[in-house]
Each structure stands twice: as structure tokens, then as C-alpha cells.
Length: 603
Ligand code: ADP
View 1: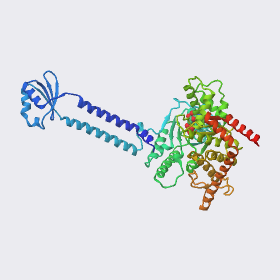
View 2 (view 1 turned 120 degrees about the vertical axis):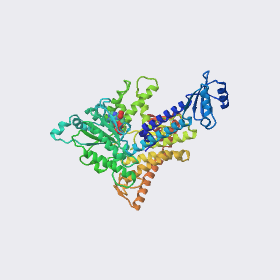
View 3 (view 1 turned 90 degrees about the vertical axis):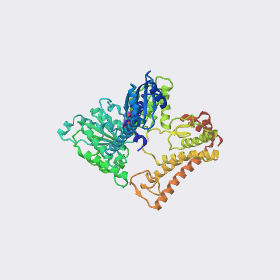
């Protein structure tokens, strides 16, 4: 559990402890400082008693508070046990008409406050421990399940775009939630659980909320990762509580985000496995426990349905799967329209154009794009968002924030310019590569420079040629540095990693290596966490490694030949980058074209 989560889940207790300690502390301080008398020598007190100027004496153990007849307050300390050992002392005072009061010793009071603080801290700590053991069944302090009231923030189907099929599929759930009795009269069975499957940011949460909004029922929101706790039984009891909460409503939606966090296939023997298993079992028990017509629908979201425990997908549980995919160009336009309503957009802006220029963007990316553009417009002091703001925002979403403040040495700038030109020239000249969108040597995010390609339309699959071109492009940076600057730098590290990953997936997942054939190979470098694919022998592992290396080296060779042949283009582009810092697709095309015509002239 992260420190932040730990803190958040215990925030009420921590706040309570702090408040208690502060109030005890201030009470103690007040007690001590309440009378702030001047110090007095004990001998002076005796002299004053003799003189008869003492009007009042308060004895607190050995501490004596004195008030003189003119009203001044003093404090002095008597020798240890002086007062109790000298009964004559008080008797003498009484005779002199001094008003006397005797209280518990001041040290006792300080002890009292100390003990109170320790006691209360102890109580809070025991409370905290109990809270853990009872797994947060203290209703007011349990922040795990969040409930959204449909009346307060109505989200409807109109707020979700680009996922028409998914909306169509969940419509009958809305009908059911509106009138459960109608369904039970006919005897129809509504799914208890619906699994929304899709990549992050495509609007799964939003869709679930819109179902609740359309049906006007409460929406209980929780995340699978909230159930994964270190202590056994905590997750399970949270599940129990969640369903108990749900049963209080005549109809409602339970939404579990990141179901895969609890729903992973069972098996394995580590401790956390055991806890997860308990949680998962509890979820299954609860889902079996309510009748289909009770008005509860459990909606869960995941982007890894393949790793879910099969028991979750059986009839009566999450037996309906709805795919919420990345939006296509039309969907992106609609999503942009929804988010454009919340901002002031210039009349000139063509959202269809923006949708076309953002293939691969999810709904969340597009919402982010619109927000970034609005921020840019505000920063520039404009009252509406222009197309240029949107372009800049897109680059920011695509490539990360510009870091103009990063100081690069001149040599680093030159290295970066050649490196990016290497990528760009290879990309520009390989027929199967995506068109270039931008090359820049302004540091962005963690990169010193960026070469950005953008597919013309939506891509759903990749051809072997495309992947090979991708590897060659990634190699282009290193090669340009080698050929022009006679150096190797760590800057190519990430390129190399990505190229190797592509090659490995081509061999192990996509069956694109002729030597190894169309098999799925399970290897240590493979990101799969499940048991899919065939396990491999040592001999095959060696061949996999050879094939991967071969693919990368072939890409390297392709790139080397292109750069060697088009040295002029790389040099021209690097020099241009060093003066203008960024080139867009037209600028890149111009440099490549002029270089090609130069080559033809000399040939
Ligand atoms: P997921 O749950 O799939 O990860 P979310 O539903 O949390 O994605 O989406 C995050 C935000 O992105 C939403 O609040 C919304 O602003 C925006 N968004 C995502 N998908 C869509 C969509 N299909 N239509 C409109 N907005 C969307």
C-alpha cells in the first residue's frame, strides 16, 4: 500500500489524535500559564509575612502563590515539606488574617495532564488497531466505498460518446433498474454482473455512472485495488460491507473499477494470494447471494479480462461482457463536442479536423486535450480557444510538457539534433512507416528530443513490414550519432529497449519469425503474467534470442544504409533543427525533397 493511501485511509484517526493532543496540550499550557506571578525569594516572603503585607496565600505542595495587600501576585517555592512539617507556619499566618487556601501540588496537575494525554493516545491507538481488525466497520470513518447520488450530479448517456455499441448493450439494464417488477413479472433474467472491458480512459467508469444516472439509482463506486490489503480478511469484509450498503437501496449499481486487482486467477501460495483469494471468494458468495430481481447490478471494469478467474465469468456472475473500445474518428469528434460544450471554443475551430489528427487518443486523452487547450488560451489572455491552442495541447498530450528550462550544453544539442534527424530521415524514407508529425530538440517530458509520427487513420493491427520499419526508425538515432559524430551515447537506451521489445513480441507473440513459426512462446522477457503460450526448452529459448537479435540487427542495417545514402538530408535537417528547434511535417518533407533532387542532379 502506498504511503498516500495509508494516510488517506487513516486520516480521520490521525486527525482525531492530533486534535486531542493539541487540546490537551493547550489545556495544560493554559493551566500552567493561567497565573503568571512574579518570582519571589522565600526569605522575602517570610519578611513580608512579618511586615503584614501578605493578604492571601495559596499552598500547592511546596509551591506558594502569594497575593500582597496591594494586589500584586508572587510565586515562591518553599523548602521541601516545609509547610506540612511546620504547622505553626500556617497557624501564624491565620492569626495575621491572611486568607489561606491549600490545593493539590502543581506537579500533580502536570502529572495529571501527562497521564491524560498518554491515556487518550492509548485509546486512539487501540481504536486504530480495532479499526484494522474489524476492517473499518466504523461507518462514519470508512472511506472506501464512495456513493454518488444520481440527483446531485446527473450523468446521462449524452455525456458518453463514441461507444454506441456498448451503450446499446447496457440500455436494457437501465430499463430493468427503472422497473424491476416489470421484468420479474415476465420472468426475464437480467444479468447480475456486467464486465466492461477496454483500455484505460475509454469511458468505462463514465458509462457505468451514466447507467445509474439514466436509471436514477444510487451509484456505489469502489476499486479492486481498495480490497487488496496486507491483512487477511480485510478485503473480504469490505466486500461484505459494500453489498450490505447496496441492499439498503431498492435498486442501485455497484461499480468495481480494476476488477483484475482482486479477480486474478486463483492459485499460488503467497500470503497476498491467500488474502486475494478470500476477497474473491467473498465477492462470488455475495454475487450468488442476491436474487436477480433484487435491483442490484454489479458493473466491473478491467482491461485484462484474460487474467480474470474463470469463476467470475460463470452464469449468474459477470456473465455479460461489454467492450468499451478506443473511439474511432467519428467517436472522437463526438467526444470532443461533449467536452467543447464546457469551454469557449473559437468559431473557426474544426473539431472534425482535430479528431482526424488524434488517432489512438482515448476519451480521457481528448478530455485532457480540451482542458490543456483551455489553459493555454487563458495563459495567453484570450477569451476563446483557437485551433492553435488545440494543436499545442495535442503535442503536449502526445509528447509531454516542454521543458525549456532544461540547460543542455552545445554538444548535447548537436547530439540531439543528429539523433532526431536520424530517426526522422529513416521514418520519412521507409514506405511502411507512419507519416512524420513533428521533430523537435526542445526537451519534452523525460526526452531531450522527440520524433513524432502520427498514423493517417486509425490503426487496429500492425503488419510485419510496419513493425520492421519501426525497429529501423528506432535504430536511426544511434546510427546518425555514430556516422556523424563518431560517438555512442546513453540517449539511445530507450530506443534500443523499445526496438528489442517489438522484436521479441514479433517472435514470441505474433508468430512472425519464419524459423520459429506461428506459436506463442512463454519466455521470461514476455510481459504476460499468465500461463498462456507454450513453455519453452532451453534450446528454443536460445533460438528465440537469436531471432530477436536478428530482427533488431536487420532493422539496424536497413537504417544504416538509408542514413549512409542520405547523409545530406540528415545533416541539413540537424542544422535546421539547431536553428529553429522544431520542424513540422511540411518542413521535414521540404528538406527530404530538396536533398533527393540534389542527389539526382549529382547522379
Ligand atoms: P475508464 O474508466 O475507462 O478508465 P473514465 O470513464 O474514468 O475511463 O474516463 C475518464 C474521463 O475521460 C471521463 O471522466 C471523461 O471526461 C473522459 N471520457 C472518457 N471516455 C469518454 C467518452 N467515451 N465520452 C466522453 N468522455 C469520455
